[in-house]
Amino acid sequence: MKQQQKIKVALADDHVLLRKGLAGVVDSFGDYTVTFEADNGRHFTEQIVKHGEPAIVLMDINMPEMDGYATAQWIKQHHPLINVIALSMYDNENAIIRMFKAGAKGYILKDSEPPELKKALDSVHQKGYYYSELVTGRLIHSINKMDDTDNEVKTVADLNDRELDFLKYACTEMTYKEIAEKMFLSPRTIDGYRDALFEKLQLKTRVGLVMYAIKNGIVTI
View 1 (cartoon, rainbow, N blue to C red):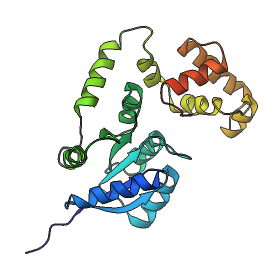
View 2: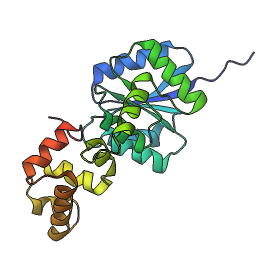
View 3: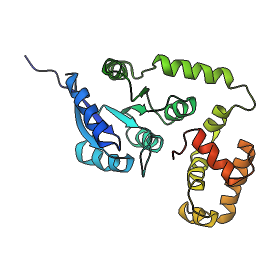
């Protein structure tokens, strides 16, 4: 009797010990096998060329060089058949919404028990999505707040990719001129992004932008 082929899983997480432990848990389920691991999104894009497409990626959100949001977006554009499950230490609405917007099919916390991880893998493989009670509760909560004029969740979801890139650079020590060079844009365009964000987020200073980005999980300190 032919043995059933195992479902291929890839891991992307910059914490090596946690990633190795996660690989062991996934392999212990029997139905799944970890085909490759990556330290960050950039490394993931290189590894997928070497090892081929996995069926599922367990993706950390906060990674250096290329974070989970950017990597999930890249996967959605270049490998749409891959299902992404977001891994996070955070259960805030903004992170959940941004990951689903980027194409994630599931979202679980890093402190989840192995049975929940197995449930998430099975659900994503069989149905194409996994909505835990946590995610459902957070999304319902945020949807109920969508009509609020001061709702930050709605605002974060409304920011486009270039605005988010600018916001991340604004949280560094770079000048606006250096940010313009980094983003291959004119200083005038960068000023436009800044002013648009000030208006959207009802802020007045760069410090305000930094505080907003930290509070909403766009950058971490």
